[in-house]
Length: 321
Image (tube, rainbow, N blue to C red; front, top):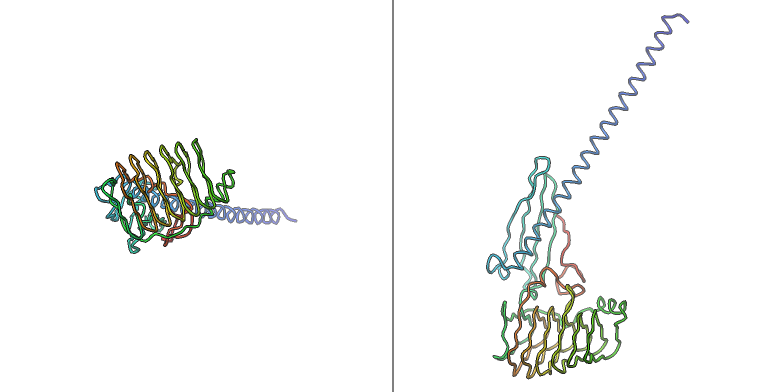
């Protein structure tokens, strides 16, 4: 082979090699660019999500502090902005849906960049905005006072699926299939009673009592103090208060049946009381029911109010934008 022919072959090989390297280089650059675009989309999408969530956090702040004044009873939409990333401003817009008379739905839409939108919603039963929310009738004599709001009528289910709490109590070894009497002493955690629960004098429960068929207070110096977000008392039956004095209950109380109280004095309920039946509180003396907005940001899990997206702790969820 002549020298000139060898030079031609080498030149051809070099050219082919350079072509291959150029194609590979272009492919790598293209892949890197595509990955960068995808990464930015993911980052922007996450920013939009957190902006939407920030809007819900603002909702909870406004509801908890009732600021501006009256916001809890008449909430309105609002908007806000977030930080700057890659020269894009982020923002969120909150809307309020009160189409259901017993629910309030807050939806926050976060936007970051041009095409990155995420939305989350927070659904609250209106029962969580009142010291007493009742389905039928309420008769409370002058010996009982309400603070932080007024008794409010509304639709309340007459029973709840209590499986969430029965399972939790079984796991803790505090499941009682029949009746149970809580005698003087200190108890803790979630207690599930398959029939009726009776609470006597000198009882302190640092936890929750869930009773399928009713709860009776028979005594004085009783304290129910649950750990948030769990409720204080839940029953699908009646709540009977036959106690003399000094009952202290903190947290959510749900009663599917009626609340019947006679001759109760110097007692306090702090939280919200929800009943699917009647309330008859007679011969009360110095009984105070105080609304606690902590239920708004710490709603009890496992209670399925009508119209909720699904059972359990589903007050918050992501929704299509």
